Image (cartoon, helix red, strand yellow):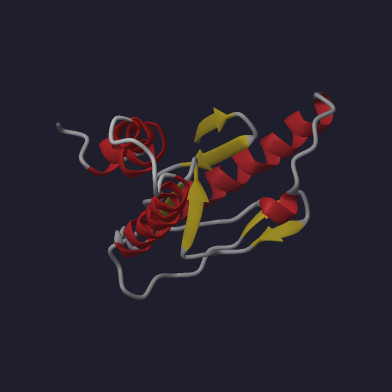
Length: 145
């Protein structure tokens, strides 16, 4: 397989840099090989959960069509991977809004449960419940620190 593949639990991403039409063909070949591997190993990959995303600086891009087995993989502009929203235009608005909403729900829960709690408990609950949501994936957005 010439394309890169990342596996984590029940998620799988197959990707490669596309510089010309031969790269598109190679990616499709690798998708076909993945389908063959699935049959050989008696595994099942749900093609309905498969999505295609293109990351490019070009404003108007040529639409590419990829297939898994015989099913067309729909092209989307954003997806959720390992709990983070990734957009094809690398815009951070959606991931930030998602994290804020999730954090506010947890903060509301903490405030509701600990209305009369003691002051030593509040920092512990914050550290255990809210802080991981705020810090999760931080290295993805600033990998140099």
